[in-house]
Image (cartoon, helix red, strand yellow):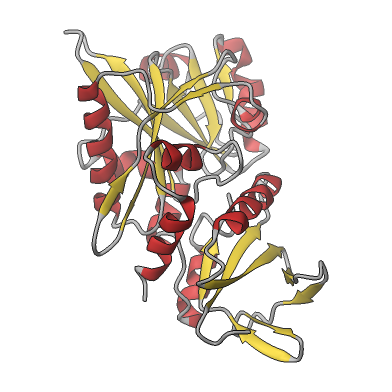
Length: 333
């Protein structure tokens, strides 16, 4: 094995409902890395099972003391971790803290920003302080469902509204509530994913998403993707089972495109992000007919499956995933 190559771990798996999506993202990334420059392995994490998939399809355990493994009698310590775990522990700061302790550079934002963006309620209220538009929302905690009356919820968020877990992704546990008769069941469904749930005002508009990454030398904001689903909302089947139209570039004006890209770049800088992020928006109309850009959430480990947005946007920008990944890694050396 050439000593001149960096050894890269594509870290996947995790302990959330997005486990299978993470495995698919890892396969996508594995196919794109520059093999002339890097030795690449898929590192699987689930609970206490940490192992590396070897070229002969066998597996070998990871030594958690230094994030190393043994191959052909040689101890190999990873130079870099490309994290593609959607959900805990890769998207909420836990794994980032581990790599910080080991002084191993990684592909995502730091511990604080991962924790912040993973919590939709905290992130929305943080972003509001910087003038980012977000939907009105209410935080509900387990065993405190009666904190707000029906009248208060109607005043704060109205109907229809969304009920969603505060700290999960891929639309697990999300419900669109059109009648307060269905609120209790929606809350029960969301609480299956975690202890905190957000009730959020429904925004009627055009759903779009924009990816971005920055290095010391350049800032890259990808083309805007328009998301058109015939389901009630952009749910799991829409995201991963093809029940959606994803149009890149979006069918919007050049002015709105530029505004969305500028807002994405601004959010990247506000958070001092690292690596690729993807920001989801709903574009609504103000009373005077002008566009209003509303942030839905910031994805710091965006999907890299065959159907994911970022690979689509990279192609639409005339770029190669191999080059984008190299940019991100080399920026930290």
